[in-house]
Image (tube, rainbow over all chains, first blue to last red; front, side, top):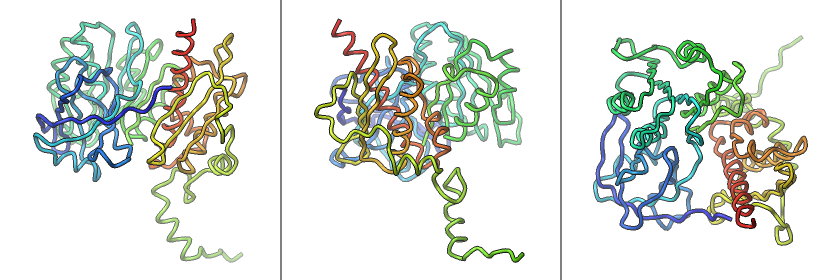
Length: 235
Length: 159
């Protein structure tokens, strides 16, 4: 039986502000380099000795990057504490956990992300570009406003290299921008319109519990098989 | 007929609980209550239980620990028994209880399907869970996935 992972010490080496309420924390460990798969997440603990699960955060770096990156949205007490981290501060991580990544490289994959739910897809996209994996990929990415789009420029660059199609949605922005495809929530009719049909595609949904639940139900109603739907809800 | 007035206390409680739950002013569905009060496939003592795969998540020290034991029909690669134990809350108990039913009913779930069982499927079968309790459905599903992976590793090494 695989035992739950131990906590390892990591030091913040660089902190990058992505949007008004999202930061990426780059972390390095003096021990062995962490092995993980793009799409997995870590448990973060602020105290080594406290016996708590910590909080879970998807990894936003790719496995070949030197440092581990976690991209955190300020939502509650714990994420606010992470936002206050300074270079040199210590956190304790356990993991990696999760199986939220394409298991085969042959299927057409459709990633559906809301807000900070983009993090596992960002890691996967970078990993694919680094390894020259030419899997057919579409990303539907929904945010409230243009300034909330995390990794906007990086994703656009990666998309060009990785030959993936990005479909941006903004739900609460009155201004109009280049490259934004829609000003409503992601719906199945949008996806159908964009992809032609929903057959023979694997759908990966990541975001809030309601976003994931709504889109899964819409996909099931559109006769997409449960076996082709993969989910990661942020809570 | 006179319309009965809602007691003040109940009104206040509804106000507090309504935004938290998905199933009206009572936080949990009747299915959750049923599985919490009469958990299915709960294993009290595992000393003599010979499982084909074991999965564990969380830690006993912090309470939210979950262990899942599975027995697999080797010919059909379906789960024939799924036992579990947790020190988690009512939602964790109900989620894992219903999950153990889901993977063993109708001749048992194929391993290839069990490995991809989603928390949302568990929540659907429970008739909903409040968002703040969603993680409880993830605990059981994670432990099940670990148990299946454990079985697959054991199978490989025994060949």
